[in-house]
Image 1 (cartoon, one colour):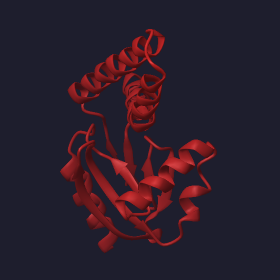
Image 2: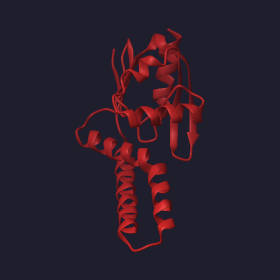
Image 3: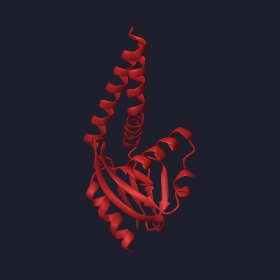
Image 4: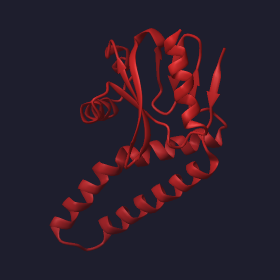
Length: 162
């Protein structure tokens, strides 16, 4: 059996617009005549917000294509936001947590190579490793933009009990 979780239309459009405004503002600041220390400040903001903006734009594109954010099958948890898929047998624990950037599912995975072998982009691999260090979980999925974020958590817990 397959359960699909789609993006929330209002949240995804709002986050996409905020991302466009943020990127536009950074570009305007970058081309404006400012002191050299200002470029450092812009660079720091860009680094901090890069993954958030990237994920918002990617989610918006998937939303326009009517593609789901997450699919739960009998064998796998499939996260299309990060293009990661891992079997239920690899999950030790899962928690739901809220941060400033939204609500997340935090997974402790038995074998981290299951995740990292699927990531070909070295920057994304580095960002996910950094996130796992900060969040104290091997892997996390942002479920803020998903309809029924509580329902997805309940379905995952039920599948892990099997």
